Length: 312
Ligand code: CP
Image (cartoon, rainbow, N blue to C red; front, side):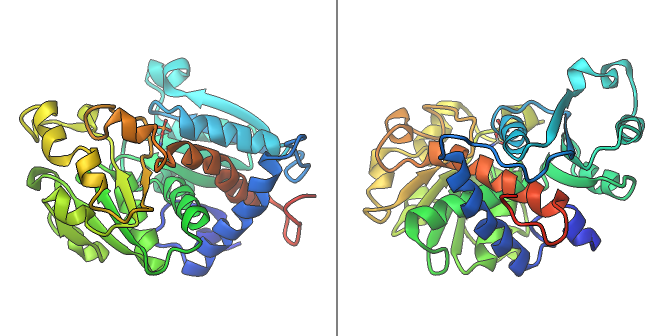
């Protein structure tokens, strides 16, 4: 298997055909997750290690459930409960875990490029579960899967991504993926949160939320990442919410059947009005459900045997 097929490190370097293969395969596993018996033998005898150096609820849990639904043995390692807290290096940690013969290492790390560094130094397949401010490829895949199920297509849609663009690995992966599959992507945020050169991703750039939301098919809100902010990028949360929070007035500017997305965790009342987060246009929990199916597809396509069907 080529390096680009052995690992899932980012969307930027993924072939469009491979993206579509992940999405189509996830459809098969989505149905499995809605059955009475939500388990298939596909990855029996395989071992998946979830190695998380940053906090996570959705990504870690859904990778664990995905692995278990595929009958893999799944082990969770977090930095706080491991010897990383005693000063062991990332490479030593991975080398020691590799000695236990895992097939896949799913890794979240605060440093951009950490999974790429490890992928060059391990025999296991490496999945990037979010690296610093760089990419979060499985989030973009599950977002695309959710949009495709809600709208029946991606090509021709207008997707507005709003929030802290400087720190958002979700925005970056989505911009790569959605533009590649034919959507128009608008990104919007305060000027202090728009990284220079972002238009090179093929996106339209706005600092006015009303204009960015006009006629959109999808409004994707991003979390304000206070933990990554070394400096104050807006005066107050209230001020941010007034200009860039999703409220009913903004929602009315989008298409009447527009869907509302958020990768979570949400700052309710800051980037999104709680009534909208829980309202009829919100697909936030559909995104979470899609996360399991997409991650099953990723684990199967990386660790399944050549020629093996998804369900056996
Ligand atoms: N969307 C997302 O990555 O959520 P977690 O940080 O909870 O995994």
